[in-house]
Length: 144
Image (tube, rainbow, N blue to C red):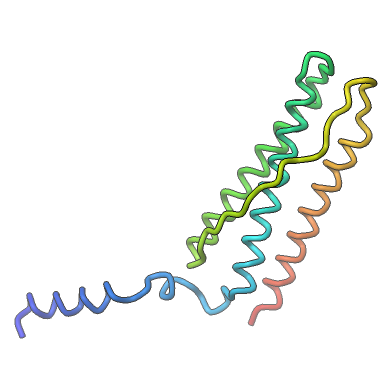
């Protein structure tokens, strides 16, 4: 066989393989992949909630610009974390499978301006994100 035929044979063998399986480590199980995908969805849900709260606080009749800036920052952090996790998922051989993001039901009341309920929902959202990250960490710690 000539070197040209050898090269064609090698290229043919490699081209027929699923590269994702070659990249995917033995510790990156389906459970880990689904857990990361679920956290990405949670981060995007949080992003949508924080964007909504930022928009509510920026309205002229509410005019709580400090809160609006806080929620914008929270939204940016959630979006960045979701983006980073998605890139990680793909680099490890996983697949991106986006799911629908539900519209937030929380609304910043304007008559009277009452921040307790929306702030409580935002804090509960942060808490659930942190608890989910703890769960992901414990899942990673229990890997062989």
